[in-house]
Length: 185
Image 1: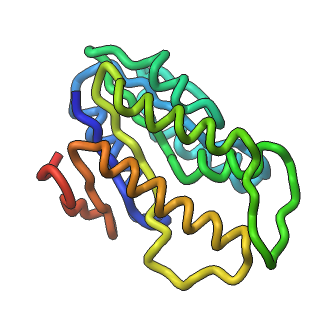
Image 2 (image 1 turned 45 degrees about the vertical axis):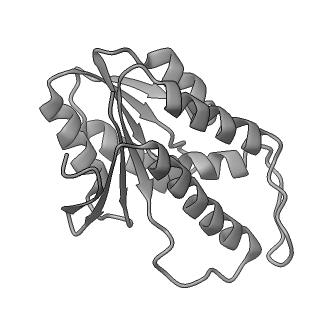
Image 3 (image 1 turned 180 degrees about the horizontal axis):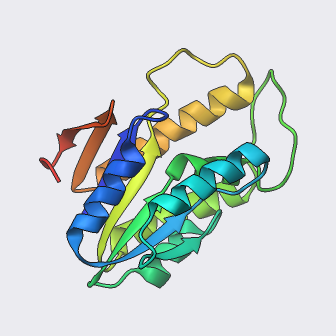
């Protein structure tokens, strides 16, 4: 079993790289999509990703219970591709439909800690290989608003926690992979 975290900025090529790895594996692929079409622009992004994927792959849409999905779909002969952890994090933050202040502290909904812990535990016990795609958001300026600062901080913490549990970590920039941990994929 190998767990691989693939990090990169927006439009860095991280999803395409993960999909190439999954395709090259020759294994049954289950694509776990975390994105939700909350508006027209996001619906177009999701449609584009669907068109890029081979029709033989099973697609599972799971916006919140990612740990449960990993455990339900992982087998020794399958490869799971999760795209993406930062969309999942955003889904958790806004799951309760609450408004957040631009100034002050952020209290995430109760599902946040429960689902995050469930996901990290499931990642420890998956039965097969997993590719996890996530945005690296810590290389830019510190966001102005409280909710965006919270998101950037939590994305960084999540990426660190996932990287610690993965055998391989790859950073993709300009479509080029750079092995950070565990050598090239």
